[in-house]
Length: 429
Ligand code: HEC
Ligand code: HEC
Ligand code: HEC
Image (cartoon, rainbow, N blue to C red; front, side, top):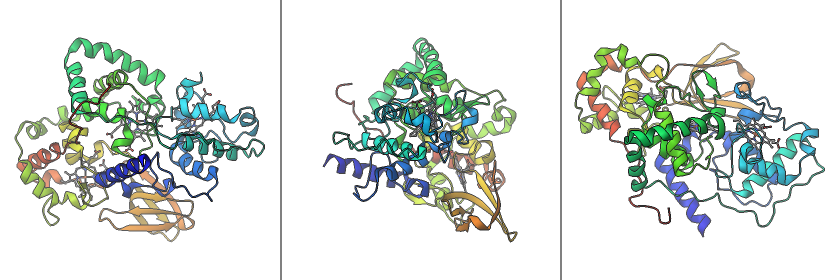
């Protein structure tokens, strides 16, 4: 019964966010905490699906410790395919390092905690897959009957929590004290630096955070790091099990990061008029959804279930992004490319060139969706080369296509798109 509730609410969230269409084939679409109980599937098979979504970037496809992110880490990810290394560990030890992370077993903090993202059963399936990667048949992995089926419950952020956090943020003294703690947690303790870079150092699994202070609101940073899976069920970012103080500290630390380069808006003095002027959100909404109009944003973007899936879902973009970031996205789409939305250019052996966003990939094919939203499945055998570009598929000429007032209107509409928070405090906090 409880499981069903969890399932239903996650399902609703998926619909709400429209994230189902991002689900890559590598990840068979099952958000953390949900497992289909088909008795026939061996345990390691379930682990394989999770491994490919959550571990491969560091540990590599075959477990060689050579994922694309490995070179950015100060500590090498363990070589899970090394049978001598894995044989020395019993199943409980492997279980513990996945559940509690490197820090939890006195190893490197660059190995993240996964016990707040997965159920115990899912972790056991990963243990089975780690044995499989090493080709170690001697240590059988059995699912202990007491293993929890559900992911640990993480209370949603309420309006009261948010107000408390914002109060701390506005008070300079408490903010500064927390910023120091946040910096320590970010770089030394909570694995953030294993996946995010700041000023060209650190991992590259998630977005570069050098300019996080320009891009994200502090309250959003708090909501996101508190429970990324609630916002986006199949995100590759694990829940790091932060308590309220830690999450606030990290949010405040990130909000002071403004990057080394100059603020692009400082350079374009004339763009300030868009942030200062008043926009009309209703007119902006009409422009956004009018498929034949000058903007036609909904051709590529979904807001609250309506629109296309070429670009990112913008349902909560008014909570998650600063007005500054939103303006940059419209006027200078290439200044920040949303994670997972880089353009790919595929050249086939017959010389055909296909440009678009890679939405799916398996061992056999890739699927590219172009700016018009049409999908093309290309057999890997036919591909000459595939290049990822630092280029947005979003049109670059909105500054000319739209009047100044229309840009302000669209901006006002985007700013009005807020994430709904629970309207009360959680009991027992
Ligand atoms: C951001 C990179 C990163 C990700 C993602 C990651 N790991 Fe690791 N992992 C590491 C690093 C670094 C180490 C080495 C830690 C050390 O030896 O101090 C490690 C070590 C390990 C070890 C060996 C620990 C030991 O006892 O020596 C196991 C097992 C492991 N990881 C499993 C996983 C699994 C399963 C996943 C996915 C659910 C995963 N890792 C995701 C970076 C990562
Ligand atoms: C295993 C890798 C990994 C770790 C560890 C990790 N992140 Fe992330 N993070 C990601 C990925 C991937 C995304 C992109 C999210 C998406 O769109 O699915 C992301 C997104 C983000 C974002 C942007 C959210 C948005 O609205 O777009 C912020 C901010 C962030 N992470 C902060 C952190 C902090 C702070 C920590 C440490 C407490 C952390 N991350 C740890 C992988 C990671
Ligand atoms: C042809 C498809 C297309 C059209 C039309 C389009 N976009 Fe985009 N948009 C994208 C893609 C792809 C991205 C992701 C790459 C990037 O970050 O630029 C994106 C990114 C964004 C982002 C950043 C989202 C985030 O959270 O990181 C915003 C905001 C945005 N678009 C707003 C708009 C608005 C407003 C319009 C209409 C005026 C519009 N877009 C029209 C394809 C499109």
